[in-house]
Image 1 (spheres, rainbow, N blue to C red):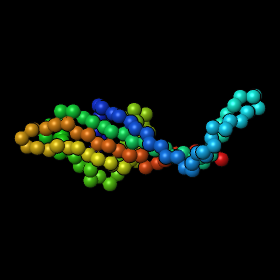
Image 2 (image 1 turned 90 degrees about the horizontal axis):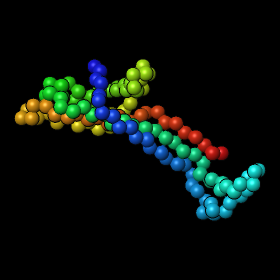
Image 3 (image 1 turned 90 degrees about the vertical axis):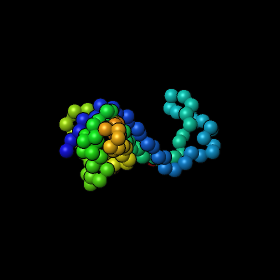
Image 4 (image 1 turned 45 degrees about the horizontal axis):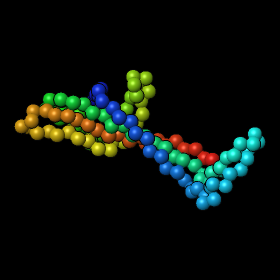
Length: 120
């Protein structure tokens, strides 16, 4: 099953490895004579997530998309580029209530992959 969501919010999380030395305000001059402060942390890892939302779904549509919370694999396609990425389901909001006859649906997906950089 596939679904196109109208609302999207992307987030990025960062995690630094190592630490910054307390004497970090001691500056040094580079080759051009400009002062700089050397970093003492060793790297950074980043990953991202996306929150998708669809408004005013019928009860039947809500039941259909609510199944995403028990799906073993969720693939996310970015901006119709054709490239897809396997994502992890974080949270799902599907208020299925027989009295309301529908509602809004949202899902949070988290990237499985991480990118990292090292300064040393």
